[in-house]
Amino acid sequence: MAFNYLNLVGNAELVKQLNYAMIYRLIVQQSPISRIQLAEVSHLAPASITKITRQLLKHKLIKEIDVQQSTGGRPAVSIVARTAPFQAIAIQFSRSRITIGLYDLGGELLASEYYPLNDFTQRLAENYLLSVIELFLQENSKKIKKLVAISVVMPGLIDSESGVVRYTPHVKVDNWPLVDVLSVKFGVPAFIGNDVQSLALAENYFGSTQDVDDSILIRVHRGVGSGVVINQQLFQNHNQSTGEVGHIQVELLGDRCHCGNFGCLENTVVNKAIEQRARQLLEQNYPSKLTLENCNIKEISRLANEGDELAVHLIQQAGHNLGRAIAILVNLFNPQKIVIAGEITVAEKVLFPILNSVLNSQALKTFRDNLKIGRSVLDDTSAIGAFALVQQAMFNGSLLMTLLSEEKE
Ligand SMILES: [Zn+2]
Image (cartoon, rainbow, N blue to C red):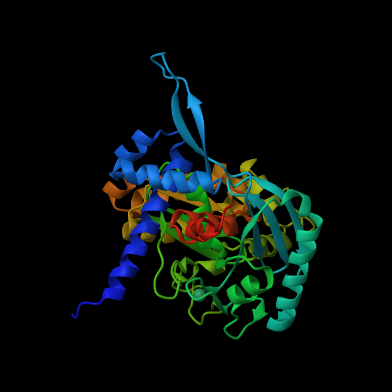
């Protein structure tokens, strides 16, 4: 390959970005931390640490504090992240509503609002989205010191690399260039991503998988989606279309799925499927505290926890099928933790024993032994997944370098 000077310049910029990103992430996740500790953990030269922290200080992204040594004596200077002066708008664009959250860079929710959503064309959806963001910005202007990014997550095939929505179930789109639309309109960097994948990342940054490198989040709602996190990074392929666990076949003679196949997981465990099965059995006078009037997933899950026979059976059946798909994921990825999100997790007393028992029989023993499985601790109807994309851009350095490139007097 011919020597290319431009490549070398490009590489130097990339190395710089990665070094800054690594130091910033260490400060956020391990603060308070001293410059000496930063040099030890990062293996960068002390001079580089001095230079990087000087830039971060100048742009008010970090601050110095005095920490009393445990051995007594002179306090040592440590560094912590400054997150309160920076805000991001995070948006979950779901089938029936838009949830907008205002977060500071530490992931603190400062304000949130819901806006109803109908079936829309791309143009109407775009106009509506822009207008509700404007309204939200106006209403919360006092809480915003410096807006650094806008991020949107939604179900479907979302190409976060090129910033284009390829497919989403509730809006008919034709390669919707949402990142461009948002960044031009609001003058800040914008990010988009798949809602469940982003939630898996949020769980890793702020939730129950913070303590592990490799985890999988599965969300059961209107569909079944998953996000795989490996080495604390989202596992993504060329067009961000991984984790379609909903279409793993779990019943040979199951009903036909909208994807064209038969017996997909989705058709047996999504909220609607469980509610429909409950209704069928109630109509045949199956004894239960559940009634046709309150036949919804929340009530079914609650009654399952209380031991109602019908509700228990329904959750066990769904759990059995979900467990089969999870066992496949475990054998493929060998994660340290599996996290389930969605209304069905309310039935934890019934759901998790059945998932554990299926995993005991269907997952590789050595993989199973090191695996924990539990509930998501995040609110999966909030916009925290969208905020995780902003955090990701700080941690990989792309947004961080944008903030550092701004002139400071
Ligand atoms: Zn299917």
